[in-house]
Length: 415
Image 1 (cartoon, one colour):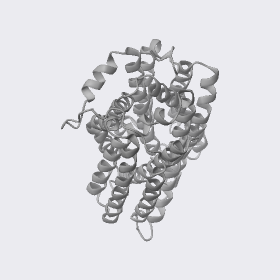
Image 2 (tube, rainbow, N blue to C red):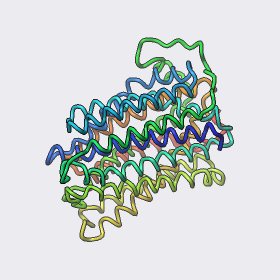
Image 3 (cartoon, rainbow, N blue to C red):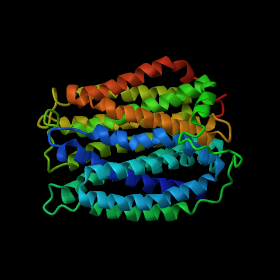
Image 4 (tube, one colour):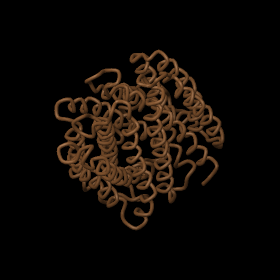
């Protein structure tokens, strides 16, 4: 591992940790604590996702116009101020202010993403792209694991139901990790801008429409780009459904034991970490397309098992072990698909288009996650298990539709 790649891994790890700790605290508050009898997680997901829809285009242009290393460092500095604002939001226990900070955090992540993923081919040789993406995905979800796992205990210890509510204290932790991530990011070696002549317009969408038109000319590239978005759509619906499984008709998690929901989310992340480690090994033995089919198809098939939670197995009949086993396997399968797809998307576009490709990728991913927030509101009608199964069904339908684009996927053979 080069020093620059190590610095990138460290910087994104602490950024993902902060994002997920802060966001999960808000999701726990939205899933009934602040609004008894209601589940407003979809609102929080939509607010976080909207900036990716609005600003991914100009973020991709900036990642080609300027050094990606420079943008990475600047976004880490911005993270410090955002996490400091999070302290105030939790201190005031203001739902409106929490959503404002969540939206700003989403904006920072939207500008960070194209440079984070687009810089990998600049510091890693092509034959190491799959292992590099496996490392990025593994450490990202290790951060997700630790961030989400800490959210439940912190909510129990400092949240509204605690003896002495002080939810602002986790915000102090987030500021400290933002500072540490910024220092680590400075370890990346200087990198040149790939397209310094690129003009940046006034539209927040930048050259996104033109980028999407260019990408659509390569049907395989655009098909796989959309597949990544369907994977994230399904994952976002599933993440919300896991919090919904705490309801009385499912696992009946007590109001003062939110840590149990963190165990479920942690298990998904452990599965993703294991799948991220396995993806490079499987890609070395089988075609990349086959690994994608195995991962995406397996993820969707396993989600059928979550229908058992509630009507078949509940809190007193082994529901938790069943949920943990299924969620680990779902995370493992999902990682196989996502690592493979992201690696291919870094290899397929020409140099000078990779940052813009990942800007389009971010735009589409979070447009789909924005829809996932609205889609999950259906859970108020049909419940979380059937809602997440709907997300899996949508993924399978699209995967079957583009099977001819997925089958020949290979690093170095993107066309």
